[in-house]
Image (cartoon, rainbow over all chains, first blue to last red; front, side):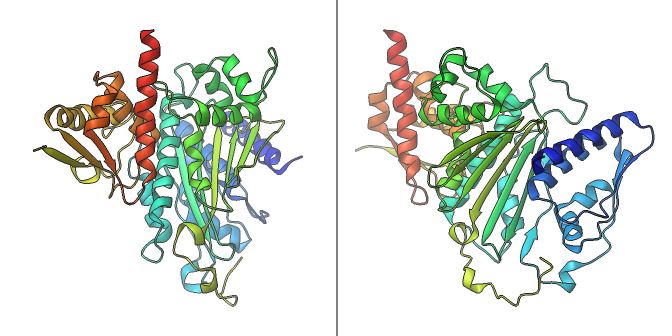
Length: 312
Length: 114
């Protein structure tokens, strides 16, 4: 089973427990050795939704024994969301090469979300290249706008506090020279929203599919990117998903990854694209932008000392 | 002697504009167009729109603000070509992007009139 499918299966079991049990659900992370950033944000979003729907006391968790995982949970705001108090102060004991910032979440377009993300990630230590800053702003604000406008249509079942919600997270990894920005929602997904915006014939044409062939979820995401790139502007249609790509197009070595329902679309800065599909739906959309830190900021990889203390 | 006006988006509107319409948020393209841009174009011979100092801008904001000049405000493209100048030392690509939205809106209008 793919790692992604394992995450989705875990989330399914989580919801089965959360919705059926009168007592609180306790997530045991003691044996968790590693958690990928995308999996963590997706899990965080589902847990947050469950706490909004069933109450804050309904979901809690335990400390992982792995110190790196524990630090990730602490710095990303995961522990705070679960109501778990941190038990170590890593800033005093370590100079980690990876920095996570607390996630943010909302249900409306938040104009300063990108700036606050940038300031939290870089502080006064690093300066973002202006052109990169503007493309990051475009990517985040348009992703947010897509959620507000399309991800949670009126007929979509969503409980109080969860409707229209998005989550935004980020991290920098100096050892890997990497900036990672992630955005997710738990709406109906791009494969379901795209046919409401564009006729199926236009979608098939974007994918060069024959009439009668139904695009799978991964192909739907790609179609959204293709239509946005080539389509002339139509009122209330925007550039589709293409705005999401500009941040990585600016950065050689960058990658945009969009997971929505069962589909995954990957676009790299050199123009290469790929799609694939899983057997399980992630229950929303997860967008990951990965770019070289040294390209989008004044970070110099030579400044990273190999003997820098790290729990990585 | 031509009279001109400069609109610095960051200082005179908002450093973080986004969205098309008021439902999207308060600093949207429609509001920028109706409250600042259109009155300036109707008043002055030359209107310079400067995007420096902004955190950024999305295609939704730009298209509604500038494509909407054709679609909603009824401006002729030749008037905008003559009067409107977009400037940005920080991001010169916005100049061509705005021009493309105006051009596309004009072509669509012409096509609808056929």
